[in-house]
Image 1 (cartoon, rainbow, N blue to C red):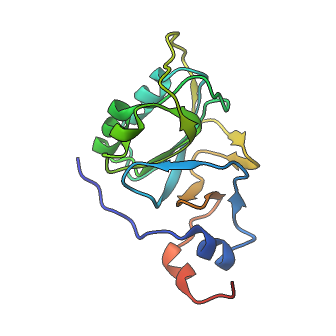
Image 2: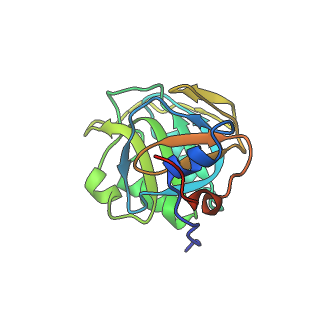
Length: 175
């Protein structure tokens, strides 16, 4: 399945245009995948050191949404690899934000999707869990509810309770 690319977002410009409407993550995410800029409505998921809830989520139609995964900030186990990223792209997800790690970064970088994660590892989890989908989650000074709007580029991950148009943020502003 192919999906339409939305206009690029420049988080600094969007923040300058809407400083009172955006939460900005304090976590230093790394960018993966071919989309270095992506945005869409949030679908939320909480899991810990298990990729199976992520697989279940990305196996559903994404409809241009962003899957936001609170993996507890674990720096031990990756919860997404290249196969899950390809499934997400094929199902129309705009991107995935993970408060945790990925694996297979070279493979993910070949996929037409945006992924933000804290880092990488070779390790995967071996104990399946159910995870919790569609709940409010929080990390890095963000509170994210299903349906919130997520805006990502190489500089930041931001969240708004209302849809903001990235095209409106391109007016010149002081640095």
